[in-house]
Amino acid sequence: MAGVTATHSDEIRSGVIGTGMMGIEHIDNIRSIDGARVTAIADTNAGSLAAGSAAAGAGVHAYGDHHQLLASGTCDAVVVATPNHTHIDIVADVLATDLHALVEKPLCTTVADCERLIELDDRRPEGAITWVGLEYRYMPAVAELIRVVHAGGVGRPRMVAMREHRFPFLAKVDNWNRLTAKTGGTLVEKTCHFFDLMNLIVGERPSRVMASGAQDVNHLDELIDGQRADVLDNAFVIVDYPSGVRAMLDLCMFAEATHNQEEISVVGTAGKVEALIPESTIRVGRRGEHWIGNVETYRVHDEAIVHEGLHHGSSYLEHVRFLDAIRTSGAPEVTLEDGLWSVAMGVAAQRSIVLGRPVDMREVVPSPDLTARCWEAFA
Image 1: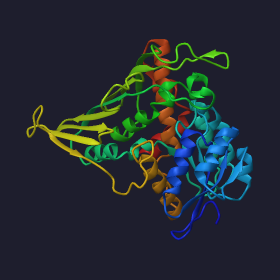
Image 2: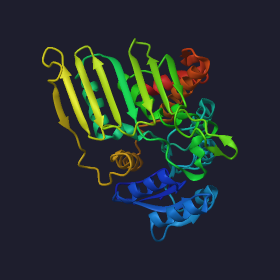
Image 3: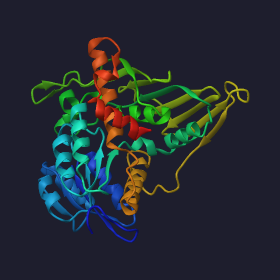
Image 4: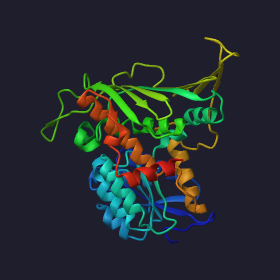
């Protein structure tokens, strides 16, 4: 089976490049889907490779280098789940093949690198799918909130608020995620998910970003390869859109003593909708019908989820959609342009903190031609 074609009856053979925590999460999800199989893995770290082999099961081909996996002929699709700063080179190698690709977030650590991958993707064989792993879109409560908004349930959206109060960054191989140079910064690494959701909910690309943040509590005394850990652990970010809609992110990574890790609300001209995670509760209030303390409340769950995993089943649903797109020769639901903009907003927020001023998105977006194309792809 060639990388660019598949039918409903075909088993899709998947390779996973990078078998740390997220790589194993992808392996577990793929193995939970009928008609999908993990046939190859690659990682330069021997411990991670051994863990990936154990997760993937008997018969998997294990390689110490991603070039070997790409040349092996054992895969129809690959997942890239390596550290952020390695994406540009590894994904560039993947895009030189006809293999379908799912790239973990963030797409890259810089806007320029995202732009380069978009240009390389343009040269791919027709039908080769490249998909960005912004799986928060598929969390059942988030997906339901988006459905309510896009169905007109709150009227014309005017304000979007997102709160993530959570635990510190987890320990990863060599603690690469403690260094801004390797992650792109907390507001790229961690919150690109939320910036993508803002754009999806509002239906626009942002015009301006303003942020305030710091490293106040976590990793203050940690040294990684002689460098002090320098990732932000809290921030407020305000995003303006051309239509006048505004969005806000409240991030705290020393707030694990909480009930819900994520809270998302959209307020429009006709009402308000909230999603609470992990309790997976939706609250909808309609002006003229409801009042404070008296709104419609219900829980949501997607019965299609077979494997809950680390992200409430969203990674499982992401893989189902990705494999469906391969089988039907469909388009990716989460594009490289989406990935670029989620990174660009994080870059703008990090820059705003350093400069102490709002940052116009024209300061960080790529060339005018590609910017226009990103707008067209989003519309």
